[in-house]
Length: 344
Ligand code: COA
Image 1 (cartoon, rainbow, N blue to C red):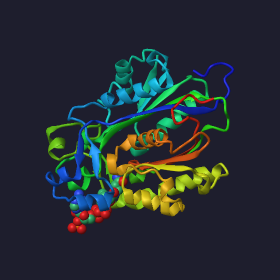
Image 2: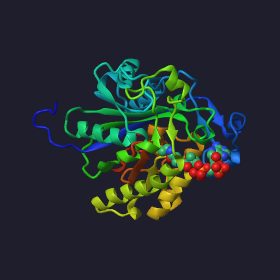
Image 3: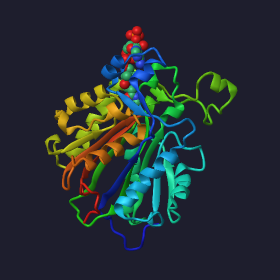
Image 4: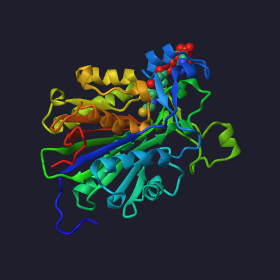
C-alpha cells in the first residue's frame, strides 16, 4: 500500500485527453423527434448540439482514445500506468468495473483500478481519490477517467430530458510534481442524500431488479425534477467555490478560469453572478456538447489548456453539482504547459 518512508507529495496534472463520438445531434434534428424547438433549447439550456454514441457503444470504448491521447502527450506507455479510476454512472455493465475493461483495452497490464459513482460530481470525487493515491505514494501515477454515455439511459420521447445530454470522455493523468506551489491544492466535497429524490434512475439495481414491469414503467431511464435541481445547483457550486478559495486564502479575483459542470447555461450564468466572476473567466462549452455528466469538467480543462486559456501558474477552480445530491470544488495551480509537457 503506502510505500515505507512516503511523505505527502505534491500532485500535478501532467496530461489531459478527451474524446466524443463522431455523430453530432443538432437541435434541428431534435425538433423532428420530440415537440421542441431550437429556440427553446438554446434559450432555456444553452445547448446547440451534442455528440451522441451509436446505441450499444460502451463507456470503455469512448474512454479508450481519451486515455491513450493523454498517455501519448506525456510520452508514457500504457504498461507504465499504475491506477485507473473511472467515474461514471453509465458503466459498460454493473461488473466487471469499466476500469477493468479499459485496462485490458488499452494494454495497461500493470494498472489496478475501480469505478466510482457520484453522478455529475464523479470526476471531482475521482480526482480527490486519485490525488490521495499519488500524494501518499501508493502509486506514482493515476489516470482519472470521467466518462458517460448518458444517451443510453435517456428516454428519447421525453422532451424534458432528451435535449440536455450528450456523450463524452475526459481524462487527467496525475503524477507527483516537485513544485509545492503547483498542482492540486485543495478540495471540498459534499453529499446531501435528501436530494436523491429529484435526480435518479430507479430501475436495474437491487431495489428494482430489471423485469418486464420495470422496463414498461420506464424505470431504466434517468429521471429528474428539473426545476428542483435547477434551484440548488447554482447556489451549491458557488458556495463550494467560495469555500475552497477562502480555505486557502484566495478570493475569486485570483482565479484565472472557473470550470463549472455544464448542465445548463443558465445555471452556469447564475454561478458566475453569485461569485461576481466575469463571463470571460468562466469556461462554457455546453453549446457544443450538452451535459456529458462525468466528462464535462475534464473536457473543459482539456480544451482550455489546448487553446492556451490556462497557463503555468494560473489558479483554476473546478466545480460540479449532480445527483445524490453531490457537489464540490477543487482548487488547482495549473502546472501543465499548453503543450502538455510534464511539470517540473
Ligand atoms: N421543448 C419545449 N418545451 C419544453 C421542453 C422542450 N424540450 N422541455 C420542457 N418544456 C416546457 C415544459 O413542458 C413547460 O411547459 P408548461 O409551462 O406548459 O408546463 C415549460 O417548457 C417550462 O418548463 P420548466 O421545466 O419550468 O423549464 P425550465 O426553465 O425549468 O427548464 C430544464 C427545464 C430541465 C432545462 C431546467 O430545469 C434545468 O436545466 N434543470 C437542471 C437540470 C440539471 O442540471 N440536471 C442535471 C444535474 S447535474
